[in-house]
Each structure stands twice: as C-alpha cells, then as structure tokens.
Amino acid sequence: MSAGIDLENVCCDFGSFRAVDNANVSIKPGEFFSFLGPSGCGKTTILRMISGFIEPTQGEIRIGGKDMRGQRPNQRPTALIFQNLALFPLMPIWENISFGLEVRGVSKTERRAKAEELLRLVDLPGAGDKMVSQLSGGQKQRVAIARALAVEPQVMLLDEPLSALDLKLRQHMRAELRAIQKRTGVTFIYITHDQGEALAMSDRVGVMSHGRIQQIADPREIYNNPVNGFVASFVGENNIFSGSVTQQAGGMAGFATAQGNFRARLGEAAKDAGGDVKLYVRPEHTILSETVGAENSIPVSVTEVSFEGNFIAVHAVSDTGQTLVAEVRNDGSATVPAIGAKLHMTFDAARASILPNVDTRG
Image (cartoon, rainbow, N blue to C red):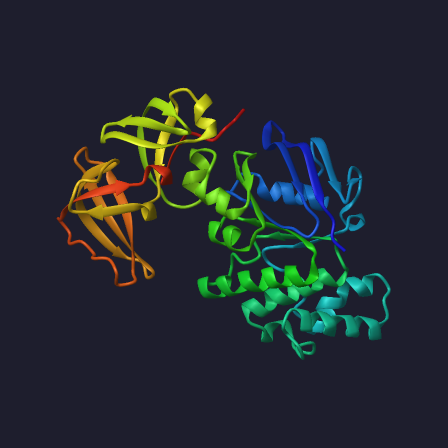
C-alpha cells in the first residue's frame, strides 16, 4: 500500500521567520519525490510537517486524502529515516528491524520471520544475528530502511540519509534505494541538497529556495528547462551573462551583452520579469573552435585546463575579462586546447536560456 500526499498553501513560521512559504504540491501514490535545495531552504521543515513532528502555521496536509491536522506522528502512515539512522547498537540486526513490531505486541516468531523477509528485500540475507558494529555504512543504511518498512508505512520519509557516506557508496546506495522503492511500491519523499541524488533517483523533483518551491518537474525538465536563475544555477553549472532582451519572436529572443549580441530561448517567467534577466549557458553546451561561429560566438583565451575524469573543464577569459567554462568529453574525440590558446566559444541558441535573474517570489 502507498498513499499520495497533498500540501495546500502550507506555511510554517518560527517566530517572525517563515521557514516554509505557501507550499503547494501533490505527490502521487508510489512516487519517488525529492525536495532539493540548499541548507535552510525549508525542505526538512516540510518533511517534519508531513511526519507530524511540526504542525503547519497555516494550510492543509493530506495523506491518502485524509487531513492530518491533529494527527500525532505515531498516528500517521509514515516512517521517517533520519541522517544518523538511530540504530540500536546493543541489539542484533533482526531485533533492530522488528523493534516497531515488538512495540505493537507482535510475537517473537512473527517478528523474526518479518525481519528475515525484509533482510532479503534489502539484499542482506543471513545478517539477522549480526550486530550493528559489524556492518558497513551502506549495510547500516539498508537496515534502517528495512526497520522503517517493517511497520508497513504508506509513505517513507528520508532526510538526507546518504550524506555521511563516501562518494562511491553514495552512488551505489542511490541505485539500491531506487530499486527498493520500486520493489515495495511505497511512496518515497527524499530530502537532499545533492543535485546528483535528486536527479538520479526521483520521478519528480521540487527545487526550493528561501522557503518557497521554485519548480516541480521531472529531472530532465528541471535540468534542461529551469524556470529561473536560481534553479539553473543550483542544478548544474552555467556561464552567466548580464544584459537585456532586444527582440522576441517564436519563443526566442535577442540578448545584448558586453560580450556581444546573442540569441537564445526566452523562458516563460522571463517574459514578465522586465529587465531583471540573465542569459544562462551550460558548459557542456559550448564548443571551442579556432573559427568564428555563425552566431553566439565569443573570442576567448584559455587560462586553465582541469581534468575531471569523465570530462575536461576548459577555463577561458573573454575580451571583457569574464571567466567562462567549456566542457570537453574525455572520450579521445576532442582536442584539449593549450593554455594561452586564442579560440572562439560558441553555443547553440536552442540550448541557452534567458531567465529571471533571481528566484521567483510572487
């Protein structure tokens, strides 16, 4: 069983500080939904309101269509996994997993059987008699998930559970979490400041800033079509140009800058932003060449070449002194320029966006 979650005009105030401002989101049953944003943006506050540890100042939270107002955490069909996991070090693994069932009066035989079933689900068969100290970081994560699933929640709430793991283990656990979610069909709500986690695992992502949800969409839409400058900058890297819109036609616009006149897509929100807009071009959407491009071409001098593994970041400076970055795939097909090389950086108008300079507040 899984349940959908609806937040309608939800706000949360701590004194005079508004941590969550007018949040509206509908999460589908069985969906893997992530709230993504920097520290202090309000994403954990939303999670704690859904779980019942914090009451909203105003607005309504519904789980499975039922208003949660006045419902304590233990009365809600949710399970919350914290950053520190909170496993019991003096209990064997199977007792850790079945602790919630023991509290509910389930017999030892049934608890053990359920624990073994869940250990198989999270790919830890035969680990029931081990102690927490005998497990790796990734195995502890799986035990925490199994313990949460033991009480058969309709909604799983995860508050940055991978933040303490090293990079390789985090990447492995992303796939594990997604696989577990698909096998169980439980609704997952995931909190993270790591864009890679959110984009890799989620069906949809809600990007937050200053207590407000800036954009909700699937990962590809978030990355390829951000609604404003905050989303574009937080989710991925960008070369950013200041300037002004000169003309509009068919969803495209001219953009006059100190580097020259460019053409790019005009974001929907930029149409009503007046002059407070900028041009955003991702490094992987640029091309370095010795010849001038037909359009959107900037003369640059290469200042630094950084090897990043699967790609090479080429840093360059324009004639006006702005530092720009292009990414070259490390697949042997492209020539890496030398430091000091005089080149032209070009970009496709269809892969560049004119967006509101700051996050939307209206």
